[in-house]
Amino acid sequence: MAGKKLFIKHAAEMVTCAGAAPKMGAAMADIGIIPDGALLAENGKISWVGPTAELPVQSEAQWEVIDATGQCVMPGFVDSHTHMVFGGYRAEEFFWRLAGTPYLEILERGGGILNTVQATRSASLAELKAMTLGRLDNMLAMGVTTVEGKSGYGLDKETELRQLAVMDELNREQPVEIVPTFMGAHAVPPEYKGRTDDYVDYIIKEVLPAVVKQGIAEFCDVFCEQGVFSLVQSRRLLEAAQAMGLKAKLHADEIVALGGAELAAELNACSADHLLQASDAGIAALGKAHTVATVLPMTAFCLRESYARARTMINNGAAVALATDYNPGSCFSHSIPLVAALAAIQLKLEPAEIVTALTINGAAAVNRANRVGSLEIGKQADIAILEYPSHLFLVYHAGMNIVDKVIKQGRLVWRKSDQK
Ligand SMILES: N=CN[C@@H](CCC(=O)O)C(=O)O
Ligand SMILES: [Zn+2]
Image (cartoon, rainbow, N blue to C red; front, side, top):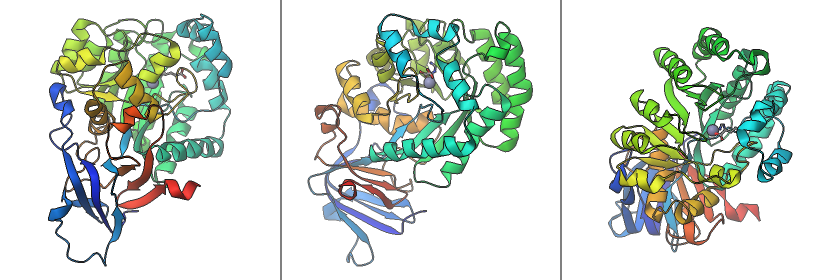
């Protein structure tokens, strides 16, 4: 998979995002820009980064050369929160919500996530794989080189394992690296309605051990929400998962301020996600922890909810990541450009903070900051090259995909000019 020898020169901006990770608080604004930058990659890894004038190469003959004059070169995006393996669609639900029916009420009536569960249970591995592959192709075109994906539309052992198997197989068959998360506690399935504790027992005793035995998930995530999984149930699930060797993530304080942010920080979870309703205490806890605060502004946008207080989180010293939350219900979009625009306009983040949140802090949220998310010697050469000379265009060219080329492990895997 790794490309042999790649040489990028004359980048108007080489945005490295170098330094300690995750970047917390004020450090998020430091993205290590090298003007007229260059980079060398050998065997998939970065072997040199610096100003073009200092390039330690005499002859270009042995190298694949990319002249990035007038372009911004930056780390590939890490989309650290998606639910990309699913069957069926829920277009009607989008409009029910706009007409005033709350997200949790639709779920309570057996729709929402449970609607997707039905469609996913009846889809074969081949069908799920084909649909997910198409989605990954579209993500790659937006500069995404690493993506997290969750199960959670099976809610039974067989289908949860099938969703994870889809990611496992696709990881070996296409360029976007997939980080698999087990999310059997995404909702309570109809067969356990009114018996949430029994469902939690089933997950802990039967499903988690099977997932761990197959080695097809790195993380465990829980939808900690009023009427879904309580704080106590979420803690039980995550502690059990951690004891079995998985790392923790948590859907926290999305609709009701239950205290999920505090729980995630206390459990040393890799990330706490959503956080629309996170309390001052929750934000303070994230500011002291290494738990990444993953903010998903497109979900607030699509649900017409108020946005997470990402500015306050950064001001309190937290490490913020931005992700799409791509799923068939609350946010049917994996648009990195829309995330960037909302982050600037609604969350009041600076462009440099947005770059950090979509690269190195996203990498930290999936426990890969030592390998991807920045352009530093020894790291994977996962790179997005923009059509424009500065990272400012990510926000300024609002909602537009400005990616010109994508490089994965030193290999050119997508180029705008090939699409015409
Ligand atoms: N909030 C819970 N889970 C997903 C939505 C899943 C769905 O609606 O299908 C989320 O992160 O937004
Ligand atoms: Zn989610």
